[in-house]
Every structure is written in C-alpha cells, then in structure tokens.
Image (cartoon, rainbow, N blue to C red; front, side, top):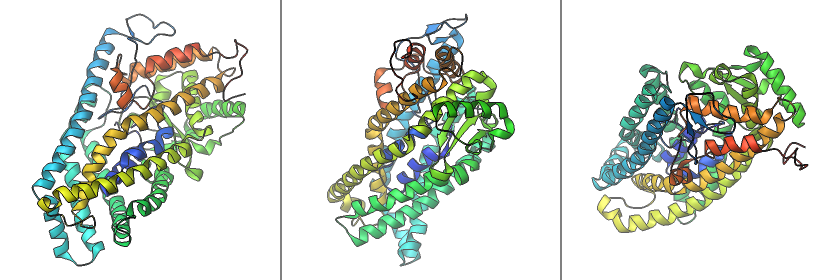
Length: 462
C-alpha cells in the first residue's frame, strides 16, 4: 500500500537510480512501478515513506471512532515530527545533489575523471569501466550523509530495527547494482550518440524500454532477495492463502498460491506493508510478516485485496506505458537542454560535446532537476491508480468479510498508527510528493463507499 525509503522494495528505487546513473530521465520511471507500490499509509518523500491526511485527525487516547483517523497524543506528535523531518530531507537532498553537481562541473572534476579514463585506454568500453563507476559513486557518496541521517531518524522513531552493519551492507549492494546497470546504459547511450548525434534521444528511448522491462521482470527473483528474505505464503500462512484464494475466486481472477509470498520485513522494520510486483512469470503478491503480526486477518485480507486490485487491473503495464510516454518527452528535453548547456558552459567546464564522457555529469544534473519537476505528474498518476486499487479492495472483500467497509477503514487506521502517517500534510506536499491519496481521505472513502445499498453496480467486481 505504499511506495519507496525504508527500501521496502529495491526495485522501484533501483530503476530510478540506475536511470539516474546512466543520465536519463529517471523520474519518469517512477510510474513504471506505481502500481507495484505497497498499500501504504504514507508516500515517500525522502528517508521514509510518509503520507497522511488532508483533514486534521482526532487526537485521542480512547478507541478510534469509525470513519475518523485517530491518533493518541504521543503518536500524533511523533507522526508530525517524523513526517516534517522527512519532507525537509527530501528537498535538502534535491538541493544538495543539484549544488554538488554544479560545483563538480565548475571545478572541472568531470573533465578530470574523463582524462583519467582516457589515459587508461583508447577503447570506449574500457573508459566507461573507469569513468562511470567514479561518477556514480561520487554522486552517491555526496548523498550518503543524508541517507545516514534518514536511517538515524527511522531508528529514533522506531520505524526501523535494522542494524548499522546490515544497513551499510544494503547500501553497498545498491551501489554495486547501480554501477553495473549504469555501465550497461551508459555504453548504450554512448553508442547511440555516436551513431546519430541528432536522434540519439529517440534511439536511446527504444533501447531503454526493454532494459527497464528486464529490470522489473527480474527484480522479484534476483534483486529483491538481495535485501529481504521471501518465503511461500502457503508454507507460513496456509489459512491466509485459502482466504486469498476465496477472494480471487469471488473476483473471477484466481491467483495461484505459488504467486503469493511472505517477506520477513520484521528483520529490518516495524512498518506494515504489502505489494504486487513483477511482470509475467515473475508477477506476485507479497505480504510483509509485520502486517500479519499487527493487523487482524480481515484487515490483512483487505490489504491484500487492494494489492490484488493492482494485479487484476493491470496497473504495472498501464504504468509502464504512461512512463514510456513521459520518457520519450523527457529524453527529447534532455537532448535539447544538453546542447544548450554545453553551448553555454561547455568550454568553461572543458566538455567538448555530448559524446564526451564528461557530458554525463551534465545529464545527471538535468536528470536531478527533471526528476524533481516531474514528481507531481508521476505521483498524480500513482494516486489515481492507488484510489482504483482501494475501490477494488472494497468491492472484492464485500460479502467475503463481515462489515467489510468498517474493516477497510480500520486497516487504514492501523497503517497510520504503526507507520506514523502524517496527521495533516500541507496541500503542496500532498500534490508534490504523495504517491497515495491522503490517509484520512482513504479512510473516509472506505467507510462510506457502498454502491450496493444505493442499487448501483460496483465499478470493478460485478
């Protein structure tokens, strides 16, 4: 039910990061997996996924009232502090990365990295093996202090239980994966630039799409297990699998038990979650063990119903097509902006053209800015898909779970309490950063959605 900084799914962040590292418009790829985002109480602005409510919740110590998002005073204060720190870190990270890249270029470091790479060999692929890792790691090391502080916050607010040794190991794995895929994309980009200086943006678009699809396809098998342990849900929770099968049969779209998995999230986090991921043969529904521990069976079933909505409604493919369109626009914008910047400052930075390895640092700068500017578009698309999944979850559980609307509303309450959902996010933050509708809005909708009593047909589950 949520998106991506507790690193719940490396796949989403990784797709963005590898494209960033290769100098393409990574922000547009956020929507590739918008549908594969977990059913969250929060959106992800920075070090942790945080979302919340547009209307102010009740601050109370008594049992929550139906249809209201209610927090105890202690949880309310923690949610406010944690979310505000997260928002601040997001904007600080963007500003830091942009500033660092500008300084990096003005000091001529990109040109120095290129000179070192060219001194090693005349072969372009060998130069890439030197230049690309240096550039990628330089950017990530600059960002590392904020990443570290993000983990400090998650430990302080008891969202994370991951040790520092495990956290740094995950960070190191991330760097190796990013460098590897960045090398592949950088070599492709270099080749198409050499082949067609005026049409490389189009050829690279054609080449990047299968790479992105490949990463999404293999992520459940090869990338996600590098960061978390997965087990067949049938082996750990056969009763839940039986309930899910009953749910999917009710929807008329059965999902086999071998496509349902449990993630041992409790080894690293206290947050609750579930998500759908993968494409084709790798497509699956994943439930965190923390969700099963902290939510009732009925609440867990609604959460899974939401994720089945992503599965059944084809959100991964729809998200990919939407992203592909944005990528095409983004790549052309990169082409025009790169030529303009090199014409204006290329001589000062000792960058001799788009095919110069040093120009990749300019691409990274443009990508950082592009990711920031396109966030409202990608997140707006994601919010529409998340709302559709909420509707599907309510419809598919109707008649299966007693008082399903109340159960759905309570599941959002549990998500908000456990994950410290922001009690009252500013409208601008919701617009710019939230990949999911505000929590209170979702809770009220869940409690009031009832087409059956009005004689109206359900939207998805007939």
